[in-house]
Figure (cartoon, rainbow, N blue to C red):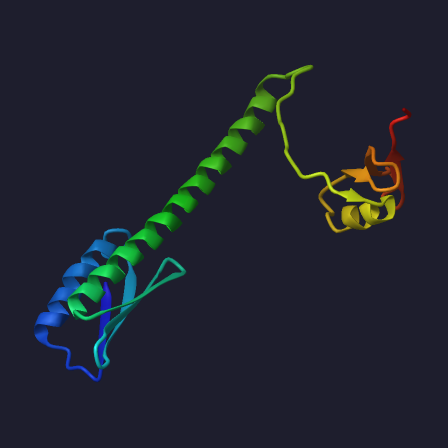
Length: 175
């Protein structure tokens, strides 16, 4: 890991440099190639440590103030590690979801499923006019229909795109 340490209104001693490098080893275990920019500042009563870590196209940032500079660095490391773990979990979950989609596609081709509910979607139904429903459907080009509460009748309606792709159909309950 490439580490750059800068002191503002403070001299960066060898002990501080060693401490920061030792603490950044906690972050280094998550990445093969990363850079860190560390800025240490001294104000009247507060010591501030700001750490920016750039790795894998992401930038992680932490800044903490304390009366003790070492405590500021420790707090920054906790913040950074939390951010990195959260991002790593997000990426792993996205990869898992992607593999589940692939599995579903393989299931569809491997065996034909008939008369089964194989997917459930949840969404919010808003009270709007049919004209507004058309505009909402146009704003969602990947959707072919929209369920809504008709403001005029107070009943659930469905607006859908007709096969010509230019016009719309409206489904209203009778009673």
